[in-house]
Length: 468
Ligand code: GDP
Image (cartoon, rainbow, N blue to C red; front, side, top):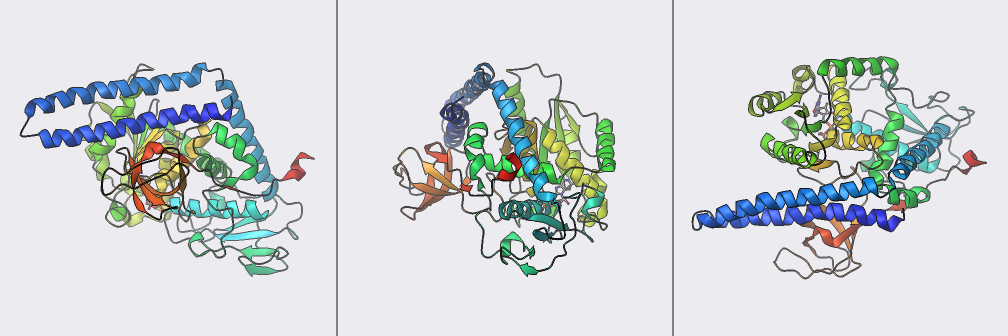
C-alpha cells in the first residue's frame, strides 16, 4: 500500500474516536446542566448517547474491516516480521563483537533507584544510545534490587561473547570516539544529549515504519524490549506454569490499576468503575465482529484490594489475576526478590491481552503496551489510557503538526495556523488536547483532530557491514 493510504486509514480510525470523545463529553455536560430543570432533555440525551455510541462502534468496526479486505493484510504481516528480523539481527551483531578485549563498550548499571518498569526503560534508553554509538551495551546488574544475583539469572545475557565492562581506556559520557569504555548516566542527568533519544526512531527505518505502524517509536522500544527480555529457560517455565494455572483464555482485556505510592504523588486516583467502563466499551465494540463467550479481564495491580472489589462488583466478568497478588504486589515487599516474578508475570500477561486499559502515567503499563507491539503488525490503538498519552521518561518534546487552522472559541483555547508545531502536553480525552504553540509561544487547548504526529528521526548507524 502507499504510505498515504495507511496514514489515512489510521487517521480516520483515531479521529472517529476523537469525534466521539467530543460529542460524548459535551452531551454529558449538557445533560448535567439540564438535570433538574429539564428532565425530558435528560432522556433525549440518553437516547442520543446510546445510539451515538452504536454509530461510533459501527464506524470503527467498518474501518477495521477495511484493513482486512483491502488486500494488504499479508503485506502488513510480512513487513512487520521483516522489520523485526532486520533490527534483531543488528542488535545481535552489535552485542556480539568478535573481540571483546578491543570492542567499544557502553556501560550501564541496572540499579536506577526506581521500580521494575522504570528500570527496564532505563536499560532500553542505554540500548538506544549503544545502538546509536555502535557500542556493545554492558549491563551491570549484580545486587539488583529485584534479584540480587543479577539480570542474567532471569533473562539471557545481553551478549554471548562480551559481558565484561573492562577496557584499555575508560571515561564518563560523552567520552571520545576512541575511548574504549564509556559509562552512561541515567537519562535525567545525561549531558550532552545525543540525537538517539526518544521519541526519535532510526532514520533509515522511518519510511517503512511510518507506513506500517501508528506509533513508530513504540514499535522501536518494543523491539529493544524483545531483545532484552529473552527469558532464561527457567523463567519461561515459571511463566508457562503460571499461565496454565490461571485458566487464561481469549478474548481478554488487560487492566492495570496502579495505586499505593503512585496516587497523589505522580498520578491521580481513578476508580475501578472508570477502568471497567472502558473494558465494557471494548467488549461492546468487539461484539460487532465476534461472538463473546465470556467477558474476561486480566487484572494487575499493586493493591490487592482492587482484586476483591473487581470480583465482588463485576460478577458478569471472569477476573483473572496473579494468585500471589497479595504477596508479590504488596508495598512491603516491593522492589525485592519476592516481587520480581509477580511483576514479570503481570507485565507479560498484560502485553498478551487483546486490549489494555490502564494509566499511561505508570511505566508498568507502558512497558506492557510496548511489548504488545511485538504481537501485531500495529497494536498502537489497542489501549485506553485514563490519563497520559504515551511518553517515554526523559524524552525530547513531543511535537505535533497542525493540519487544520483553529480559532479559539473559549478562553482556554488557542489560535493555530496550518503547519504550526505544537508541543503536546496531554490529551483530555474530550476532543481537546493541551499544548504549546511553538510559533506563538501560547499555551492552550486545541481540538485533537486538527493535528498529526510529527515523527522524529535521528541518523543512527545503518549497520551496512551486515549486508555486504
Ligand atoms: P510506576 O511507578 O507505576 O511508573 O512503575 P515502576 O515499574 O517504575 O514502579 C512500580 C513498581 O510497583 C513495579 O515495578 C512493581 O514492583 C510494583 N507494581 C506496580 N504495579 C504492579 C502490578 O500491577 N503488579 C505487580 N506485581 N507489581 C506492581
